[in-house]
Image (cartoon, rainbow over all chains, first blue to last red; front, side):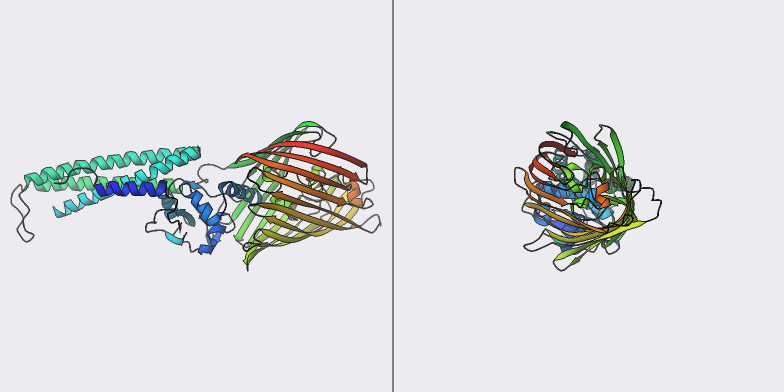
Length: 137
Length: 461
């Protein structure tokens, strides 16, 4: 007879996932988009600095993932958070564009990308089915 | 029984995954809340807490079902071979237990759907649903002279600038900017600096209608109002805003087509606009927000190429030109066909912010018969983004022909040169202190030289 409560495997998975989402700095970074978005990996930087707003006829809706933002800015946008903030402040004031909303975690990011047409973001954990992985850094 | 066991396994698996996600989400959510104490984050945290409560309820429910399953297993005979006939014992209790399990499963599915809806609600939450974000800038300062009006000294209130950029749809865009500023007489004035609504066809073309920043050079569109945006303490004197002595129309009211496209190792940018010809009222350029009485229009173009890769990444080279038929309010009135053209270069990287702009004027006097007048203006600025701040140096020079009725009618139409050294110190992501030492020499209307020591505290919000 099994003892009640979650299996040890579930706890192990939870601990591993928590570690991966909270502290990993050398893990892969996956750029994911809504299933209706076809995007080239070379366009990712432009999307997140507001220089690319459309993928075909689809209006892009990028979102930052706070849990992985520092790594994303370092690897993909190649600027620090100060410069990134400054870029968006200037962009917003100049062109009326709005900076990407900020999601708190991989889980929230995946949910946003799944549900929002045109959405693109990035996660550290291997993304589940239902999103389009456009690049891996 | 086999189906029941499958359901139980599914529930257990579901609870395990939910717990895993919850544990994974908690530290990052807490990190986010600590890093950015934002009401939206707090609302999200509340919803996460609700999710956790739901997960806890699901877990309890799974335990309850497992306990029931264990009891049912204990009262049932040992498992028979798959081919054996169903056991005849507990013929009444087993269907009852199965019915209870079906009810529990239905309840669990309802809970799962609720959780999914919660997830969707969190995911779809955006600025559209949390109100219209209001952004802005403000600055105050103190100095041996007012940075705009050198006749004034001491502390001063700068600008309080608000702007709105509502999300309206996939293609429609809007931008509104209201600026509150203190004039030389100390009176507070409110200007509708920008009121533009546009349609974005794609990344290559957007058309705006309304009042916008006139697209020439780099500073006028990239570093407009909002002192915080600018690394230097103030704009070049001749590029000041119309009511602060500027000699080029900083705003236009009309139609503006703008866009960019990637080509080769860079990006081609273009702007073209037509709008109401400005007028000079009380020594300052007026944009004729409501239209002008003579129906004259002005217009201009700006073309640029920006390198987006390679050793020269961050270099932007451009050309600009504009023309307008501008009259003044003198008696008798003068009317000038203003033609200005020139170029600009910007090197903007993580380390450098270097800007150069030049303007050449070929203005034709349409009423006075004094012919065509040639003038020129320009500036050169070097800035370096060091770890401790952004030191900069700037040289400005104008040579404006005073027989040109256009410059003669402008309060800021005199020639000068200025050397400035300054630095910007960012206190945090939203505030900066800037210092500037400058020496200005007026070279035609009056022959005067003065030095300035200026301090500015600028914020964004």
